Length: 371
Ligand SMILES: Cc1ncc(COP(=O)(O)O)c(C=O)c1O
Image (tube, rainbow, N blue to C red; front, side):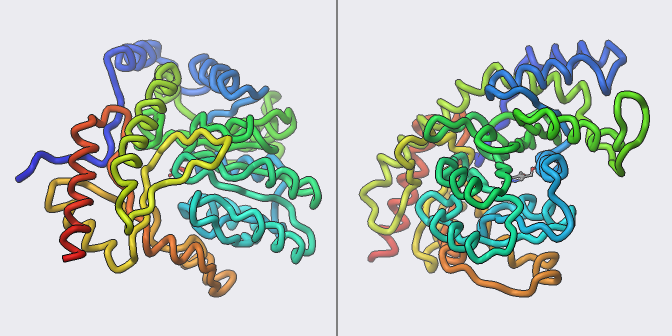
């Protein structure tokens, strides 16, 4: 059996373990100083006024929507191609997701399609772009469209910690941004966790209230809220990871550049596009191949010990909670992408040899397929 090439590798070290031990010995596990420090440091790193730590990226999106006052009957514009957790908070607040096709090159919301959908809408409340795979959507154009339609922009930056485009840092271009610290993300809290960032003090105040049983500092429960707090233990891991994220993102980008250079000559492989003015942080390295080759290629790579994934095989609008509520729909670029994408192994510590092995295996597959 060949040496495996793992899909991802989670970065932990002794300094992180020591930080966690300190918190464990402190006896203070929630609503403490470590969460506050993590919030302050994350806000400063993003260049925003407020960061609110929560228990998942999904909760960050949910509280951003609630914080921006999005609720029943509001229309929220989301991309057709994304993880379902972009859409479930929209449905949960009673708003209606309006699905917009994606740009098949960058996987972000297609801004021409978004413009048309906004013109056709009666009263758009929010646009929820997703910076999928670590590449920011065209937030400059999305902000302009949002301003024309008086809509909020809530960014799903769950896969794009510290990506940039046209001078904007992921999560900071609109009303609020949401990050995930799920274990495989570019940075993690060693469990579930998330962060909402915003410059708007009212959005931050409402999000803090919603994450803590709808309660204000005076102890009164002012709205119906659940518990979405982050623990001190998770925040301790997050603080340490924040110190290392720039190096890790650079490690991912270096591996991505090597992949793209090696795969450039293969006619049937399309490598990721970095739009001008964008710094991609390669949460995932996703290629497109002919739909008929996708499964056999994955099998061929699997036989060579190379793990791959598909993010995601099903359009976000094709899942039951959407179909039951809104019926069926079809977006051509989203559906083509879902049939053709393959995610190759990437993480900060992947070696040149491992990238080369993956590329050689992809080349061999297509040589064999051509024969
Ligand atoms: C694009 C996107 N949105 C939302 C989420 C939800 O984040 P979490 O799993 O932390 O709830 C994720 C991650 O899983 C994601 O990749």
